Length: 218
Length: 218
DNA sequence: AAATAAAAATTTACGCGTATCATTAAAATT
DNA sequence: AATTTTAATGATACGCGTAAATTTTTATTT
Image 1 (tube, rainbow over the protein chains, first blue to last red):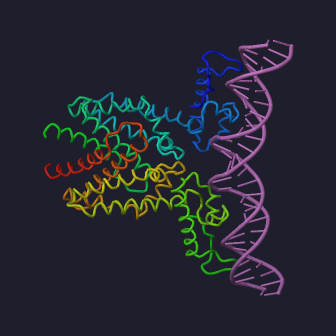
Image 2 (cartoon, helix red, strand yellow; image 1 turned 135 degrees about the horizontal axis):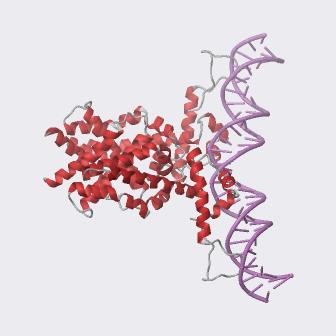
Image 3 (cartoon, chains in turn cyan, purple, orange, brown; image 1 turned 135 degrees about the vertical axis):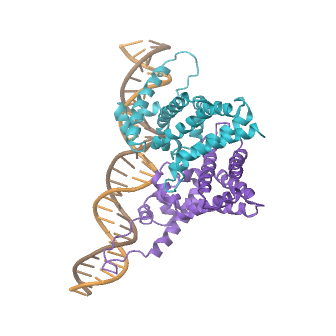
């Protein structure tokens, strides 16, 4: 976020008061709402700051009081899109018969969501402007990390272990990576004749289940 | 590549002759060589076309006779970097005791290479300017695809199947996706406390080996 | 009310990638 | 040799993100 004016003292000094935190976030939300729509409709690169400013009724540079740069506005869309992804995942897990079925369902839902929103995937995970620090800082937010819990819970169930068991962590991280890899590979290298997506996802989960069997009968 | 002047006939007409294919690719190579060095030293975004033009002794727009845009110059670096990656992979596979050992080695080498060249990874697989078509067209080239063969051969050996067996293809695609996912996740989400990289890679290969055992004893 | 201080908002300016247009160079034809 | 044709080269210009400088607004203090 953008730097607030630095107040050395606690209480109001002379001069024009800075915008309240409430006012700031309210206008940020306004800008983000317009930006999300425009980015979705016309693509991130096609929407200029001058254009966005015009749409929200601000001069281009006034936007910079609310977001420190264009990329930071994009993260508002990330938040939105990632939120929707995990809504889908949660919904998919609800009707499951058992833990193993739930693991299949949430895995497929997670991958399917991004395939149905490839452009968003690219905006989130492939944006060139994105330095590693940017994605990291964002994706590490608690809200995102908590969303992965459904995977760990399902895996713990399938393996018959507690979610806190170290093996659950290792296998869960592996599955999440595997699913990310399926999305990323199939999206970024569409010219290669990949095995069908559903089968790759199923195979990824099967391997986790098989690991569970190995745990049971060592 | 850039459009060549369209010749309706076969043989020389009037007018200044277009550059020979040889001359074109020679100068492309010169430009690419300088570009690769500069991109590696200072980063893709920091090297402007004006700057690159100056370094190679051309006006900025003259570069556009040899590459249709800046991104296309970047693909020269891709070629370079991906070539190096598979050199590492091939070297890692050479000393292997057996097929399973080779699979571990090449998998680890592949992932390790990109971790040792994170900036290149981002330039190749995360560049924002990269539309899906761009990466696809490039990464689907035969040279790249052939480089994956070492994975399929090792897997076939481990599973005791021929490389042409459909299961080898499915499991191989899965492993490649899995490895990509490990790289991509650990690089793009460095804030998350991932399981150690080596362990994730080992686990990925272990699962392939376990699948081989399952094949043997159905 | 006037002066002063500080934040908000606007204006100006820069280097960027590159589209478009103008110029120059090199060949075949006359 | 002069003309014509075509490609290569160069110059100009546009919209971009945004840094920096400037102006305007809004408060407190005199």
